[in-house]
Amino acid sequence: MGIDAGMWKLAGSSSSSSTCRRFHASSLGGSSGEVKALVVDDSRINQMLHHKLLDNLGVENLVVCNGKEAVDIHVSGKQFDLILMDIDMPVMNGIEATRKLRDMGIRSVITGISSHTLDHVKQEFIAAGIDEYHEKPLTSAKLLSILNKIKHKD
Amino acid sequence: MDVVQLQSRLSEYLKSLFNDGTLDGQFLQLQQLQDESNPDFVVEVVTLFFSDSEKLLDDLSSSLEQPNVDFRKVDAYVHQLKGSSSSIGAQRVKNACIAFRGLCEEQSIPACLRCLQLVKQEYLYAKNKLETLFKLEKQVVAAGGSIPSLDAGS
Image (cartoon, rainbow over all chains, first blue to last red; front, side, top):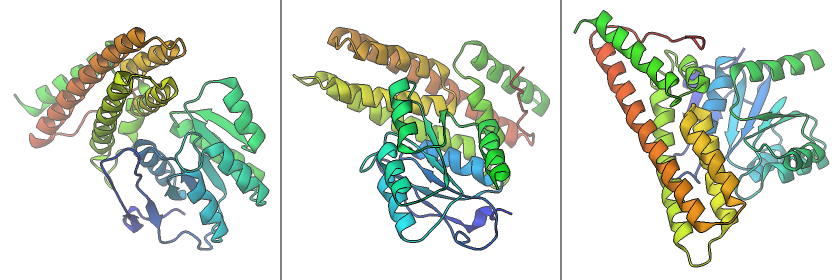
């Protein structure tokens, strides 16, 4: 279950808010049978927070900085049980990325995590293919609820 | 001052930050995520919040000084700041951002400048308080004590 914190390597960092950090897990792609998650967010604060929340619950996870990276990582053959998708990101936003992933046949649970409160934005996100939407900040309780649904789905 | 007194002082100070609305329950979530594998998690996230916020506040000031203000860009910056302040539990900064976003729709430069001033004030207030909190924590640790936890209901 899960991975050791020591296995994570910070691949890049910057003082700019537009440049994100990527956390790599050397065990991702293994055959542990446990839940694997992808965090898609350009905010370094949310990357750290979501990574740590998942890590503490023993969920292997990888962090990417925008929707294009989320699509590319699936093109490369990686698969995830859960994708935590932000909306506003540079290069490709979360709505477009979700649409592309669904068009590619990706059936992972995609949970929209954003601070948007406008109904039309949420509706567009839902129409693109997310399974559910949670307003930021993501908490342990919200994440546990999402993970429980994934486990019961199996 | 002995370690018990320092711990008591720290607890009271933290409580005061909740009582005056500087912080909300999300900050306790951050504290709960901190563990032996990442003992400086809260300081790291909050330090990132400081650097990102200062860049966003600079960007906001520059945007509002342009001859033709791009209110969509202004709104996007405020949205980012609202998201990051919400993620660390900086409640007063978040509330000032919510008020700011409401006025962005009116596209009034004087009103936006007033809101920006308020957001800056709240940010500096929160930064000052959080830095003091971290100093008190260091004093407790230096005296050989552990950081007392504060329940959400305290």
